[in-house]
Length: 599
Image 1 (cartoon, rainbow, N blue to C red):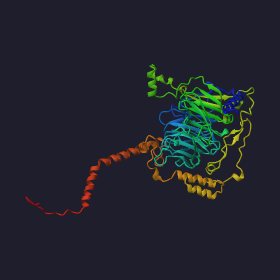
Image 2: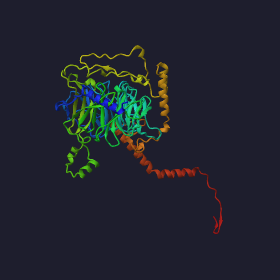
Image 3: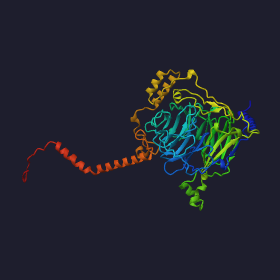
């Protein structure tokens, strides 16, 4: 009988021979010229491991550096070349912007989150931003600490997930009435009784194809699979050989892919079975670099792209359902050497120590040349690619030290590039939502609506059949409203939704007294020491300069009144003593005989 290791070697050799004839072995990375890039963009210097660029077929949005508050730049996709330094921006946040995401079903709607504890929804005019945009369509004020991540639902309309440093993960319906929304439709994760679970502080999030499952990586560097409707944790990774940082769903092969590091600080890529996270399906060490690896997966071509923060290259792999699962294709290197972390900023103790240790005499204005040059790229949706050039993927790299946003096209060369290649462009996810938010909340799961990328092809989006047409009512946050809706609407998933609501009520009891002494994070500092991060239910953050001044003067008046009361404390004490003496009975005079006579 042939040993198993020999069989594995034979399978590996056979697979390597098959890879030699794969259609993607010659995939090329072609950076755009200076004229087709975006020059003069003041890219943010934030050190968070987020995507500071978001792209759709109409616009490119980039988080920018500004003094006071936070802003990002929105440019028409064809507005290349030199960008005007005074170009209007979206600048309604009071804190640094940490993440931006375009609505996948509306090319003129973008969401942003910030250190001011809010998430905002913006409407971008068809001709771009012509003047500074300060008023958002919606303000989601449900967090008490800075909001670090946002993610749109892949198939349901108007559903947005947000995660913040207050250990809350909230799900919002941005179509609800009102300019300021304080109540999310679902609380996926939150602190319970003085406990601040590390699984609630997320590093990355990813929905599966139909949005029925959510995979996350958390502060404890584990991978978790959750039910986003209830927050129930279904699977948790237990591997000690992998500390996960970023994760995504590989929907074609029903797997998860995470990037992170080994106990020896080697960067890794790991495949998991989402139904069993007890051990990895496949592990592969890459190198010993320190930058965080961000994975990007193309389900149409099965190509995985790895871009490291500060790296000067993008690695391409082809994924398969059989061993060895991951096959290296090519490494697209940049002409610019990337040597470090983010962008110029203030010199810190670590950088100063390195400079002193090496005895380098560097001008203080040029010290940042020893730091990293690139931030994480944005990605163009498949419907925005140039199929005439056989373009299968497009990045928008942020080169911070040059204030440059550079498109990087991944191209599969063909002899006849002007002809539409059916094998490169199968039916892909379009910009039409498969269902409404109400349908998803009631337990309906649908995959994305597909479209063809062939030029001139009409893509009529299928309408819902007559038996699926249900007159859904608006579902409020309280369970009684959901129960009333279920009584009026007869759905097959009624029992399923009742079970979900019962689980959520048991997991998150709604007695307000249990949550009085919350502390926002592991710093153990009471929330009242952060007046700019109050609970939104008490007083939302000011949205305009006039409101900010009003709050400032109001607090000054309160402080002055308290000081006046403190100065009058002696007078009040005397008055209280006089009142006490008046209410007490009069003392009875008593005669005492002593040595010196009667007293």
